[in-house]
Length: 463
Image (cartoon, rainbow, N blue to C red; front, side, top):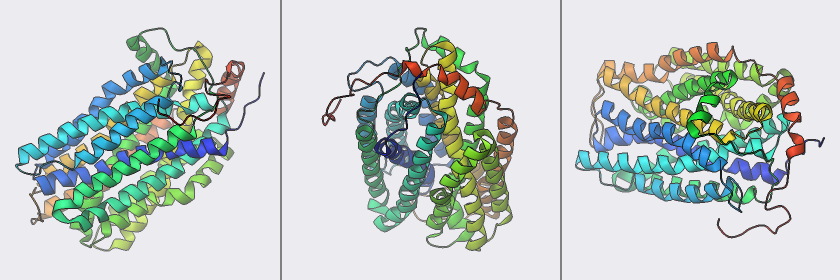
């Protein structure tokens, strides 16, 4: 029986850099698309929430299909990597177009955003699903997956910090004409950078080969849904994506209407994401000591504590709110790292028990549900704004009622806190431990064979 092999640093960093693409696309629409619709195009909050939600809800259907297609791929450039380059490049171009359309009349601007965002979501599905599927094929070692995810989450945090932290400043510097358009180009370039880095960095790495499933997609989905450990992990992650998506959507509104201070949105966003750059290695050490499940429980509890602190810190003072958001950020780092390290464990145990590689289907369901959760966050926040009577505008700010300002704060704090509390109840029932994973995956190590690119010079051309 062969021993697990550590991945080269080049591969860890290269794979992690793919999070520049996923982090940028996952963050900036959730941060700025809703304000763009309500305060520039003049779309009512309820309709704006649907425009943000529905294109990503499409991924719930599309992602498992993308996973099934990549599972069955026999491309000489590898099963997953060609998808990264093609879909990532398309996503970069489409994102630049997202904010480049007309803003008047309102119906035309709303239609442009809806169609462009649907196209972005489609391209993203064929990038994200193969990307998330790769760790289970890059290594079959329990600890190595955590190290790989540590790199990914650290780079993801940096990408979110850069894209989300700079985008509001770029928008404000560009003014009404070029502000949002500049954001589209900026984020499109980030997506292109992450795409190329992930494609290049994972070249020539031997993959663990497991036969692709022979059953149809519907049957594969049924079998994946039957895995209790997967259901619990996925439900927890989606609930937390919903909660954090709701908070992310509220940053710009809280900065303008609760804090009322220029630059507050950037400060709050940095407090939300910045801690991950420091604490992600600490969460890795905690996971190595107490296990991924216990670490995930601790991170989720801290996420809840931070959301409650945000609720208690309401007021025009920026410092208390920023500190409370930083507590959320510490929990958020662990709540990202642990489940992404646990998903390949679930898929690997399934492969060991069945002898079939369903990682693409697992990750297709996972990423589709995650995308839906992140999209539901702004949708839920928009619903809270509508309940509070938030007034839309076509440029500039209009006076908001006291109830609307209350809704802005509640959607940013107490509503996410309730959702996180429910997620804690769910993850407490998860029981797939390290011993089970190691025992199951050990039987697969003799199946490791070189990837088609082993022994070849690095490829420089496209797929």
